[in-house]
Length: 143
Image (cartoon, rainbow, N blue to C red):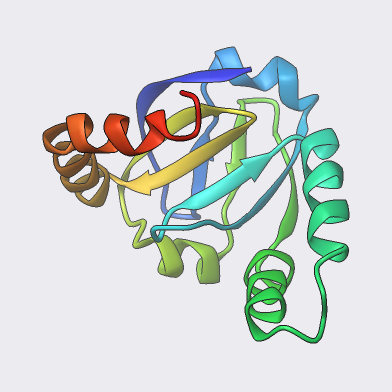
């Protein structure tokens, strides 16, 4: 389980350290892909396989299914965690997420999200301000 929020810097080559608490669950390997809200999603191999199976089963005849499949699969890259705990984030993914120097790494249970720091702070502030409304809507789902 991935939980918590950490700030990390990217180096000039686009490498970023994965928080040490998360590395063990990734077994020196992960899949990074375009996420929602213009962040990156990082999955362990097992979680990626589960998600891939679900996406694969979506009906190809529906435009939304095709679009989501393309977003997740075409943007995905297998990465290895180096001896210093870093992963290389490809340029196209850094551009998608607006990552330059400083990033926020957030644990979101079964995945890790990597955010542009300013975008994360803005998103977090908005969500915190709307937390009562969000909770009320989720109560219909039994949460």
